[in-house]
Amino acid sequence: PKMMSSYATMIEKKVHQLLDRAEQRGEFDLVADFAAPLPIAVISEMMGVPDADEAAFQRYGAALGSALDGLNSLKHAREVIHANTELEAIFESLFELRARAPRDDLISALVAQRGDRIRPDELVPMCSLLLVAGFETTVNLIGNGVLALQSHPDQWHTLCDDPSLAGSTVEEVLR
Image (tube, rainbow, N blue to C red; front, side, top):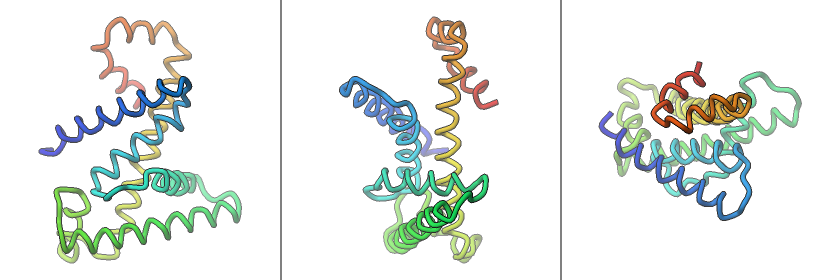
């Protein structure tokens, strides 16, 4: 909870960066240019992934998330295995780094609990789950929310006229 205000500032900054970039290009794909990069940046920051390769994390998160409904081909299975292997290597390296030099991030907090409250073999799956859960749900929330508002322009105009409705709009989209 003490870190939430710093996350809010970081999230707002990232939102503005992504929207500014889209405005400069003059075109915008909601999912590719906003909904996917935003949660990856936030999760990377929260976990304390240094100089996160957001594109790679995005691919890995998408690959693992796509397996939630099952594997649909051998190629799909290879992609999921590759993503899992790459993430495992990234996380193991990060666990070692944070054991030597802890920071104020989620990975450091988890590493501090290793062996005491969290078994060492639970760390990689836990971090992978956090990545997938935070990535997949946020991408879908943003995409589905915008689609719902596009499908109901009267609701969009109501929201534009009264931005104080943003919180309840998000709650409704979550439902």
